[in-house]
Length: 394
Ligand SMILES: NC(=O)c1ccc[n+]([C@@H]2O[C@H](COP(=O)([O-])OP(=O)(O)OC[C@H]3O[C@@H](n4cnc5c(N)ncnc54)[C@H](O)[C@@H]3O)[C@@H](O)[C@H]2O)c1
Image 1: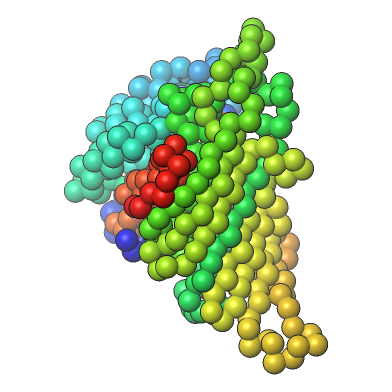
Image 2 (image 1 turned 90 degrees about the vertical axis):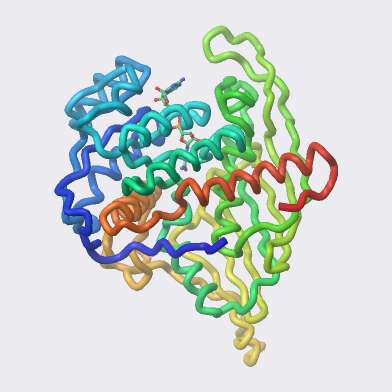
């Protein structure tokens, strides 16, 4: 599998002749807000040669629609997501609803001729992910594009790290050690939700957070060849949001895995939403034959680089910290001053920029549904290995 580049810089060429993209957003939770803000800022940020029009917003909550429909200046709001997917006056749909709702929405949107920006993880099962790939495949002759919401690989910091790896600065990769912890599920009173059911979330921390970690490992180091793992559910019941009645948790709270990439390089991965004290520790150390790179999303504006050649001066060798700046594209599209940082929502704007570029230039975006299936298969292999207490080969 080729791991494609996703650097976004400069104005895309408009090969389609389209003058505008008319947007429909499904869901106004956490992700719906970030997609909406990204759509509203992407034209100016990347000097796009088209207009972006906020057409329709779906949400289940009437009060959210009243508030956010007006605030974000959508032309209309609806409590029927099908209306958005079927509408004649919409070109692109942002799917920001729970995991179990991705397939149906993508199916309707693609079959009625719309580009789809879908949140991760792509689906709740391999069968659903494969169905989404087939739908996207059928849309390709019509120029329809898909992209998945793996925003962390869009930050200028990660793009800079990817470039260093591609340029051979750390040599051939020897190992990738990833840790991704957040503490938002440590509170025992955290209510039960769709994320904790097989039908709703598919997988637990593995699908929710591990999908970011696994996709990043694959993007940086190549496809995974084999894996052994252990998934764990620590808190087996959570209170219902409305009644307080305790409900069964069906999914994992954390996992640890070891394995190898196709290149032969070794990896370890650990993900947990019971990671006390951590808010967004999506971090890794990737070591090669000539150096190593360390990154932690809690300090997303920097990374550490060690080059073996620095060992010539043993008295002052060691990792150096690189602060991200305008020489790390597309940081300069947001800010001219190095070390002044970009944030979470800027990653979503870069993602929107990548998607618009793909639509306008006729290229595939990364990661599209094809790439998403590769990630889903790796996630499934991690789960299967744990259940079988055996190594799984991909
Ligand atoms: N890329 C990221 O970093 C990131 C971060 C958080 C969530 N996500 C993903 O985004 C998606 C949404 O997560 P969120 O945190 O924004 O969720 P959320 O709970 O904040 O919002 C979900 C929205 O979906 C709507 N909804 C709920 N049930 C529905 C149903 N049965 N059918 C249709 N719509 C329904 C609700 O009205 C709500 O607005 C998930 O797939 C999640 O994994 C991605």
